[in-house]
Amino acid sequence: MSHPRISGLVLAGGLGRRMGGADKGLVMLDGRPMIDHVLARLHPQVDALLINANRNTEVYSRFRIPVLADRHSGFVGPLAGLDAGLAHLGNTEGWIVTCPCDSPFVPRDLVARLLDAAEAADADVAIVRSDDQLQPVFLLAHTRTAPALKAYLAAGERKIDRWVFTQKHVVVDFDDCPEAFANINTADELARHGQATV
Image 1: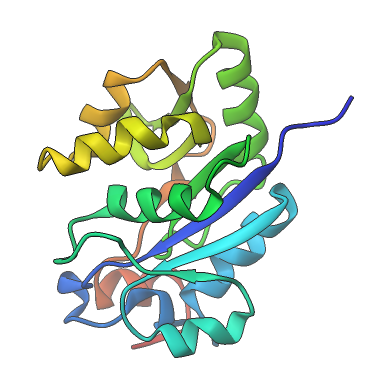
Image 2 (image 1 turned 90 degrees about the vertical axis):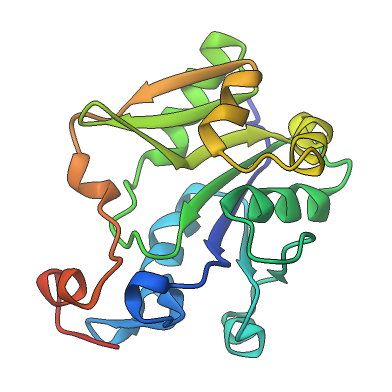
């Protein structure tokens, strides 16, 4: 049985304020840009990869993956990255999974678990919950959600979980691996997680 087409979108469009304005996807962790760790984890789980970035696009393009800028100005948040990814896919029938560029420990079964839960619940969006906390930047969305997301952003809304709850959604527990969703926001966190340099 064939599986639905799935695109993986790494979100690297933020300002990195807590990292002193550094482009977190390009911060080095154990000798590699942080986004490279995320891409390596995500690549075997999807059919295609995409990067959402609003600066240093020429550097990100060296990964030979399409680099998509937000369609909304002003660094409005992760949903703008998802919107860019869905717009890129156009009328393609399938799914898109998002991961932030500063979470290098993405579960190797993230996509399978989200997709299984979404299909079992007949949901259009699946999001992660781990250690009793929602991790909404890790989500799987069907391409048919694109018009609803476009309208939500056009109305000035920005919160991910609020949008998710307007959709047919399912929350998927990953309590067995809470450390997989650690994100690295500061130089101290970077130092704790590896031989890191900003």
